[in-house]
Each structure stands twice: as C-alpha cells, then as structure tokens.
Length: 188
Length: 188
Image (cartoon, rainbow over all chains, first blue to last red; front, top):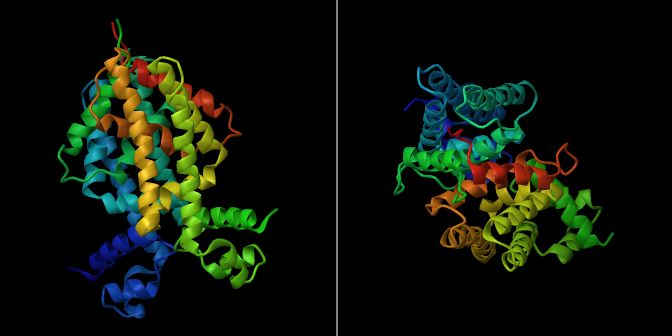
C-alpha cells in the first residue's frame, strides 16, 4: 500500500481511538514505520491529516448528495435516496465519520473554514430538498431548524451503525425515513 | 468557589476544547492554580474527573426522565415532556454534553461500565415510552432501532443548541416532537 494511504489509515484509527490532540506525531510515525521526516514529507502536518480525513468524507457526501439532488424523481424519493446514501457512507467509514464528527473542532483557520463550508453545503442540500418538496406539496412546510433534527437522526448513527450489522444501512435509513414521513402518532 | 467545583469547571472547558487525551494534568492544575498534589487530592485522577462529568449529566438525565415517566399523563405527553427536559438539560450544559458525547470512549473499566449503564437506562426509558404508548394505541408500533434515530434527533443538538438562542430549548423540542408525531409527508 502507498505510504500516504497507510498513514491515512493509521491516523483515522488513532484519532478515532485517542482523539486528535491525544495522538502524537511520534505515535503516528511508529504506527506506520516511518521516521518523522518521511512522515512530514507525506502529510505536511498533523492538522493537514485531520483536514484530509474530515474533508474527504464531507466532500464525498456533498458530491453524492448532489448526484441524488439532480435525479429525476419526486422529492420524497430524493430525500429517501439521499438518506440511504448517507447511512451507507457512514456504515462503510465509521471511524472516518467518528473523527469527522468528534474532532472537527480541532481544525483551525482555512482548513476549518473549508470543512465547515462542506458541512453547510450538505445541510443546505438536505434543507433544499425539504423546502422544495414542501413547495411541490410533498412535505409539510417545515421550520428550518427541523433540518438539524433530521440530520441528527441519521448522522448520529456513526456512533452505533456498522455495515456488517443485522440490517443493511439502506434498510435502517428507510426505517427512519418511513418514521419521519408518516410520523409516529397513531391516528383514529 | 470550592476547589472541587473550580476543578470540574476547568476540566469541562479543557476537555470540550482539546479532548480528554489532549488535556494534560499540568494544564488542569495551572488552570485552577493548584499544585499537582492538591489537584490529585481533590479529584483522584484525570479519568475520575471525566467520569464525574459524564456520569453527573447522564445520571441526572435518567433521574429527570424517571420523574416524567412516573407522571400521570398520556404517552404522547410523556414523550413530549421528556424531550423538553432533555433539550433543556443539553442547552443548559452544552460543554458538559460535548464532553459526555465526544469523550465517553476514553473511559475504561468500571467507570465506563457505570456510564454505559446510565446511557442504556435512558435509552431504555425512552424506548419504554414509545413501546407502552404503542400498546395504548397512541403511537404506531415501532421497530426498536427507531429509538436510536429519535435519540439522535434530539441529542445531537449538543453540537448547536444554546440556551440563549432565539427559540427556547423547550420550543425546539416541541418543534421536533410535532414533526415526529405528525410526520413530514403531506397527505392528500
């Protein structure tokens, strides 16, 4: 495996287990059997590594969401497909998402701004689907804060979802989506 | 302020900002102007501090949820009151909850087991309300995994909710609860 790839995987593992601030460059370099000089040659800095992890996942999610957004299906299906895609990504990359959600605050300056922008972009795409879907008469008209609740419902799964669990990520996403669409209240 | 209290507040601030593993005992002791000896006298160990933070919030949430559980109201109202209570607690203690959610994995052995038990207990209470409410004809019969989605919806608010925001935590909880009860799908 290429050095860069090996370093990324070790960083994901160490950051997820011990946190960004709790992972020393020494630990990283010994995990991949490289001297500190060689390590810095490949990664630039520890923060650049954290940025790479957070940004790769977020940017990928935005790309996939954009693909769904452009599909020729109704808004409810668009929402459903987007959430399936999100849970599949989280289940396939649970450690990366643990780092992306839990260590984001350790990013600074431009790196933080770029990842924040991708997070905002994703939230905006989901909000747009809910908003446009309401305009088309497929969803109730929803308060903007509802988007944050919806994102929490699906995204917090990074803490417990695994792709090898009993239910597939897509089935879990559909379970949540059906719950959200139909509501939990039993009506007469 | 008593030393123990000052130490707790500094630990919450430092753990939330730099992570548990990223916070040194030296940093803690200089933040509260105590020698390492005096610090250890008050707290025992850094992990004991983390335990105290996580356990206080979780145990408190369980206590409050138990109080709501015992109320003489219907299941939908019980659920509504429980979620109001949860969002109020999260908004009043955002840094403590950041630590409790993000640094929980740093706990080991018995300390971890005790906090995990409180987490499970809270999840169980919410699951029970949904289950019993379904039995009483107030909720649809829900797959057990839905509880996890519901918890994510409200709990992930630690990342953005503040008690001094435009909407009160109780109003935000009600917004989410109304969404969840009625569903987002526009029917006929």
